[in-house]
Amino acid sequence: MGQAAIHIVTGPGGTGKTTLCARIADGAAAVRLMVAGVISPAVFDQAEKVGIDVIALRARERRRLAALSNPAAGATHTRRWSFDAETLSWADAVLQAATPCDLLVVDELGPLEFERGEGWPAGLAAVDAGRYRWALVVVRRELLPAAARRWLASIPLAIAHIAQAGPLADAFVQQVLAP
Image (cartoon, rainbow, N blue to C red):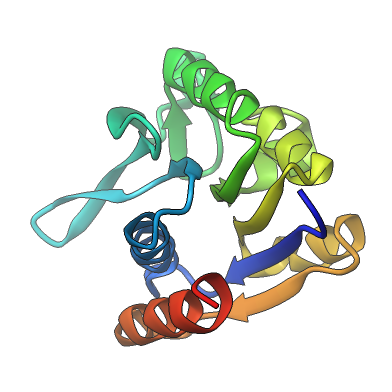
């Protein structure tokens, strides 16, 4: 596949990282690139974030990934979220089958993957393998040092505000993917 480029998308919560990835994935598909991986849009009840879904980009299948944390339920959880075991397994299988492709999107690799070896280990493996032309990997700011150590030649793509998502995505498609 040639030299793979890894772009690490990072920024504070609620700044549009998933929106950026979705717009880039749509732009890549529009220029007939093979797009694979997952995005994880938030689920809101009015203005409150109450869940996280996951969408497989090839099949456009959507499932509920997480709800506000209920550690007593015995599910895989973080401080804020309880994750659906079946959806975690399904999304991990989606990532295991995602490559080769032109654009790999993994939204996101977080403490489950980097610190606990849980979640989507196939996402880490897919990025590590480099069987794509470009990868977009969403990583929280606090995990950026671990990601930068893992992928030494990665390129950071920071987003600070939701209003940046559209223009950043359009520029990425025009300047990186389309040439």
